[in-house]
Length: 131
Image (tube, rainbow, N blue to C red; front, side, top):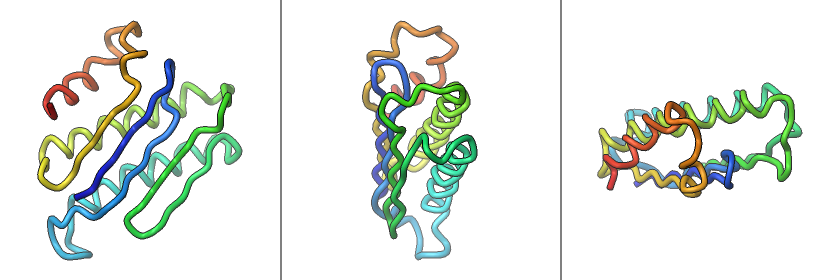
């Protein structure tokens, strides 16, 4: 099973981690693993395209971790936060479709409850489906 965790601090995304293999199919034929890998690696590349100093990452077989630099509020913060929001939605959507092969957790969302409704609507709906 793939385990993905997206972490927020009070106001923004600060990290994500994915570990494991889905076991849906053999290596090279596993659409669940390929989908999660594509989403998270695209998010990683997207954030790195703005500024390589803003985040750090580790990629190994069956493992990907991305961390936003501490106190890294910058002129690209909105873009980076949008990229990670999209990645979160994508992974949650796949978890809804293939719950026996992927687990997605989103932590720190409680601090986001006072944000504008449109920012949370899809995210909250997907989280509720996974409960």
